[in-house]
Structures are given as C-alpha cells and as structure tokens.
Length: 131
Image 1 (spheres, rainbow, N blue to C red):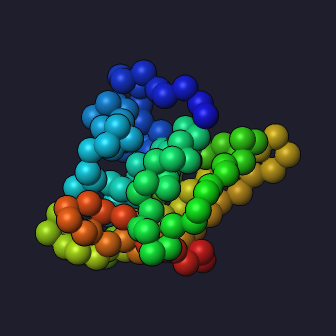
Image 2: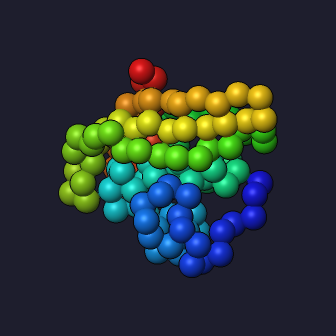
C-alpha cells in the first residue's frame, strides 16, 4: 500500500480536485453520490494500493473472497469515456472508462464498461466488460 496523499494533493483520479475533496472521504467511508464518483474512487484505490476499499465497494453478489494487487503495476491516468444513468436518484448506472498503467517492464491501457447498483443509499461495483 502506498501512503495516502496529503489532503491538498491532487486526487489520483485526476478530477482536478484535492484528494480530501474527492476520493479521500469515500476511502474513509462516505457514500459516493454517483456511480462515476464510485468509479473514480475505485481507480484511486488501485493507484494507492487499497484492496480493502475495492472489496468493500464491490457488490456482495460478485465480490471475490480476496484481492491481491500487483505492487509493480502503477495506475497513472483515468479518463471517463461515458456514463449512462448512475445519478444520485438512480438505482443502476454504467461508466465506461479508460485507465493507463505501467510497470518497470510494460505499459498499457484498460478500457471497461462497468455496471453499478445503488442499494440502501450506497453505490457498489457489480461487474465490467473489458473492451
């Protein structure tokens, strides 16, 4: 796990907001207001090495028993390609994103359309289809 960014440091999800105004509160337990915000916080969790947050924000119906992150893989950029539903009054949403990663020996991108559900006021990641 990487040290968490200073509160005024730019958030790893590249929203342009400081970590303490963006993904920091979600990593500390606040509910994401939209599916996109949950997606951004999950990217930041990958970037910061927070597997427990990833498990906690994963829907119980599809959540793996454990999650091991590759310490050599660094997630460096997130672009939101599009969203469908997923607003504060929706119960389902989709977010299509492109994420860049690199390691000492390789680099690449991941493009995925992720499905989310909101139950009891909390968004959860359900699954995704990699393009």
